[in-house]
Each structure stands twice: as C-alpha cells, then as structure tokens.
Length: 42
Image 1: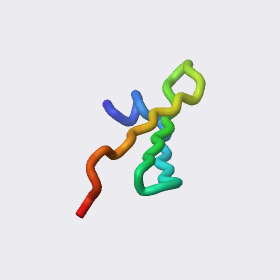
Image 2 (image 1 turned 60 degrees about the horizontal axis):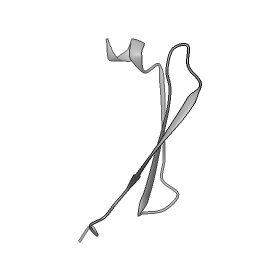
Image 3 (image 1 turned 120 degrees about the vertical axis):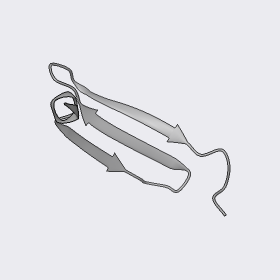
C-alpha cells in the first residue's frame, strides 16, 4: 500500500524552475528531493 510507505507528502514550489518534494518515511527523518527543470515549459 502506498499510503503506508508515504504517510505524509508535501509539495513546495518556490520557483517555476525549482521543485522541492518533501516526504516523511516510516522510521526516518524528513528528506528533501530537488528537481530542476532543464527545458522551459512553453
């Protein structure tokens, strides 16, 4: 079950070129993954 693996998920978009996804894993601390957009969305 996905709900068990990812109990809470938060998506934060400070900038259009920067996307930060934060998720809390069971028994683990908060981890942050940053995705940078290379191509411009037109």
